[in-house]
Image 1 (cartoon, rainbow, N blue to C red):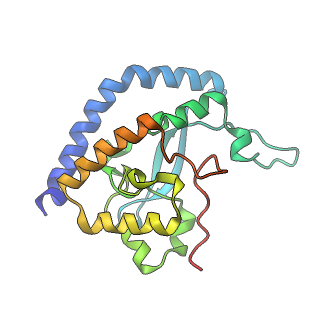
Image 2 (tube, rainbow, N blue to C red):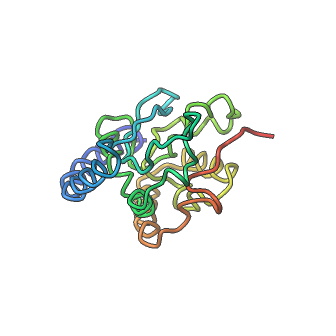
Length: 202
């Protein structure tokens, strides 16, 4: 209880501050490359539901451009994903700016990934429990398949984490995340550049 209520936040803050300092050279280089590649647009900001479904703006590196068709509609994710963006996404470097979200208190290092706002009305009571803790940069679902597993599996893993949160578990998730980043496992579902859309429970 002490870990969940106080120590987790303290560890989040210390590691995030240290991480931003250590990763600052990479951060600056990516900003420069994306500034050139995306016509000056470096960051992707989007509203997401956080703890107790409170809305915040997640910060990520912008890995897709804003190209549209003749009717003004955005092209598919695959068509908008640049070569540079693909490298950044596959190496998970696009997640680095979320350390700012952690410092602000919107997120935790470890927790269920913050999903899209439009999904909120689609959750059942069990699935809503993923919002009983702060969302994380990485989580139990991410080290057990990430985007390559079904939505039912993701939600089950998220809720299991909420029920079993501990320092030991967070440490395990952190090390497994580092391992999966290096082997680039489960980044996308087969046939998708990003995670498949959640369409509710049937």
